[in-house]
Length: 113
Image (tube, rainbow, N blue to C red; front, top):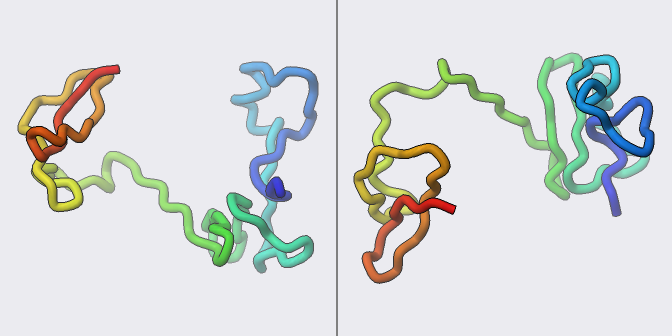
């Protein structure tokens, strides 16, 4: 079943234009002071609690707070030496790289697409 709540395009048409995509008046999001129950929420539904000023997503069981981070929220000097307790190769990141598991070296290493 497709979610009934989320970011809703106000004027759905054959094609979503770039102007419509970036327009704040072209979209709405379900909101209120209590989580909706009718119809029952489904996984990936979004809801904005106006009394809490928070955005929530439904995970299929519970409403979970969406956390939005800015650069100011990330501590400086953080070093990602391990990921899920496995080593990450020391390497200055380059544009377009991602971490790929290399079983032969038993670690995460940078790779490009």
